[in-house]
Length: 164
View 1: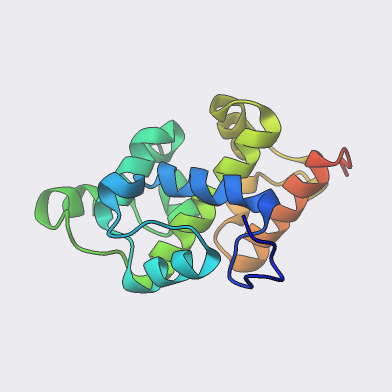
View 2 (view 1 turned 135 degrees about the horizontal axis):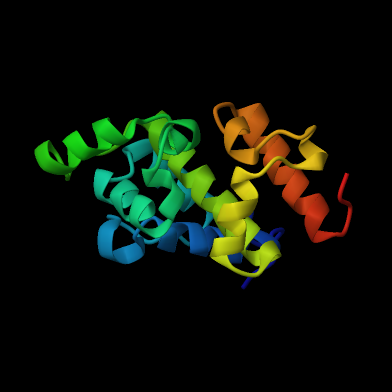
């Protein structure tokens, strides 16, 4: 893979795996209209709108999203709205905001999975209060970009052994 200086749109090596895992969590090539190899590819996909089928695939793959208000906290869409889309408009694209939040959530789950070792551990982690997040649950912080960034920063600190 070319270095970031050789190709400014390339995903940095450290996040490439997370980006590809996020793409797969959202259904990958089976569901998406295009492949995602760079951050700009992801941007274009998000602006076009990720297919509703991708969100359905994500909910099937991340078990806790179908319970309570977790989906609303993570993506900004209720489980009831998702069920209506499944029956009425499964091919309709999500809004840019919902697409962006779905992509970011998938990236966070992918990063947490890498750090925690399993997706099950990552799912447990995102639902539990975290000392480094002032005892807030990571899922509760995903409603804003600032909160999601705090979660991503905390995951990076965990990766390097800085727990508080």
